[in-house]
Length: 161
Image (cartoon, rainbow, N blue to C red; front, side):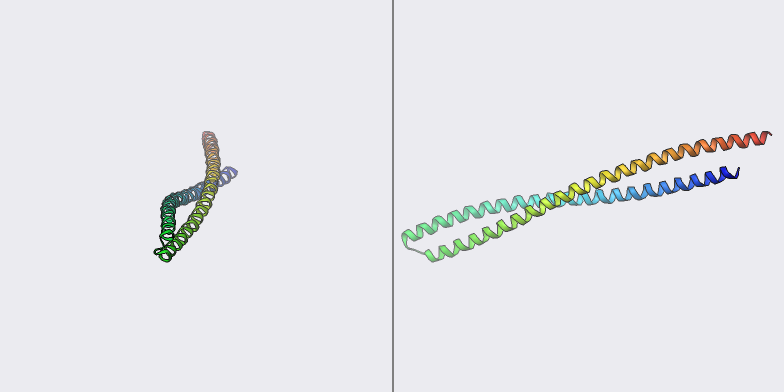
């Protein structure tokens, strides 16, 4: 009788531990999912920024091309060459800055994509771990029910004696 009570107490403690671990894992999964969502939003934001920068680079390249054409015409005509040359230099600097910004944004996008993949694998592993704990909990619950039924039967037999 005492062994059964001890076993029941032990099973209850294991079930409580399994429930606590399950809740902890669920919270961790939720946290990782939120972090993953945040990273996905950051990827989307960086992708949008990248597209905007590419558009800006195209505009700047177009302006650069126009400035070069203007510079050539100015040189041919001999007017305002110096002014156009300065303008061209500024546009080239802007294009270089935009290119640098684009490369940095692409690097951040790649890094974020790698991190996102990492977190997705983490979430999958945690979900698998959670599933294992749920299976263990179900097994323990089944064992608990079985042991309880045996105890009830045993008590009924003792009561009939």
